[in-house]
Image (cartoon, rainbow, N blue to C red; front, side, top):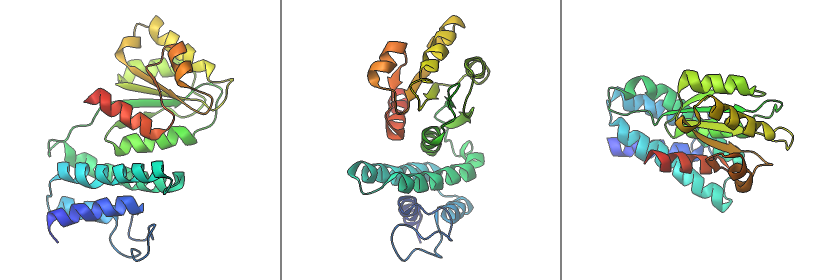
Length: 227
């Protein structure tokens, strides 16, 4: 198998949502065959071009998954299976990327705001951005404003993602932004807000940089900012 064929196999297994050889995949005939993890490990052993692996194999696979999701062919669980495969691959690749000249796209700090315990949306965005090459700092759920501001000061992220599922807790997003302003750090970080009750109008009103209706919009926005 050539290196190009190996990378194409990685792309296929990302699309199939297969992390390891034990996974079945969306289509028949894959069970028992090497999956994303085994193929990435083989690529490292063969000293393959890791940039091509990430761009053509992992990112290419997730781009295809994004298209399937938008068209309705894939549902959220399907998308998450593929994102998990990419996340596992990035964990394996991380120690090898510096030597291969591949740099992280930056640090992304994410939290569900104070009073809100929902984390599904936050976790989806985290997995997708990790797969896109960002270093994720996940503060968890029900995170007080003071802790978020302190984390921005400590980690210096390029992006801050705030999540809320309730109309009562979405107001905390504005408190975070006002606190960043008071601390003189608002201009140091792009603030993304998302969650069921939020909207572009709400994001503009509270002074966020962008509203993201789903994880793909977060990936698109961060990619545009990094370009």
